[in-house]
Length: 328
Image (cartoon, rainbow, N blue to C red):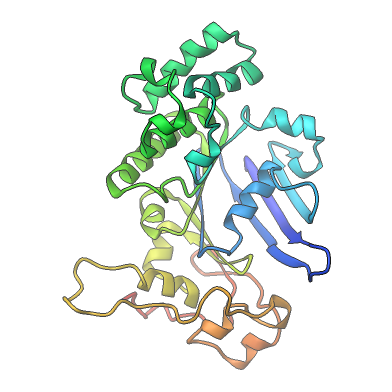
């Protein structure tokens, strides 16, 4: 049985005097206990909005969220705000993209970790601070006793990200959502954070949703990958199948855009032409059609369905890339 089952999740933003904008369009996926599921795509494809909708962190006004988000038998979209607040932190943790803006700048790191323990586990301040020190030590922050009293601006970006991970893991949640946790970090710190996340999943059995545009992160961490474009899932496959045989032209383009160490000197990088803004509404056809090299007439005749593939994944494309076409 799935720990998290997202079914036909849609998020529509509406501002007065403007046309509604669909950021997430009937997205469905599931997460098993101990599984790592990736949500991949360019900026603006709906990855982060999907995670915020799951967590119930979207603004109360100006948007409409529909569909189902079933977590351990309960639809999170139908919970009262107080009940959802109890779930966040205790059952579902989230690591946000920018730790400097996510952490409170005027509250010491130790207090921010301890308040989660006090709120969800009923610990007193002394016991919570002791547990907070152990959590900071567990996520690899050096000299955790001193860091408890320091403020976010006094520690490095890598340590801030580790502090966010400590907060997210304080109550041993069954599901962890990581929203591009390595974006602002240098390569060596990225590797350390990803190794830490992988260890946590392996040791605790926590399910992980990894939101990223970095295919290198996907290659080393995810079991199943959902590729999003224009708010919809366009391809879903196991990690090895996706990298070996990308079928959707968008997925193929993303993989082809990754620089290779074995490429000849001076060879130009492959790029997907156009930008995310160059799309069409899904009701008129495939949103990727204006940027696609495989476009056919059927691509402009309504939304292509998401259909099962022979390898056990799903594909939304009228003219997919041949399995014989290798990624450059």
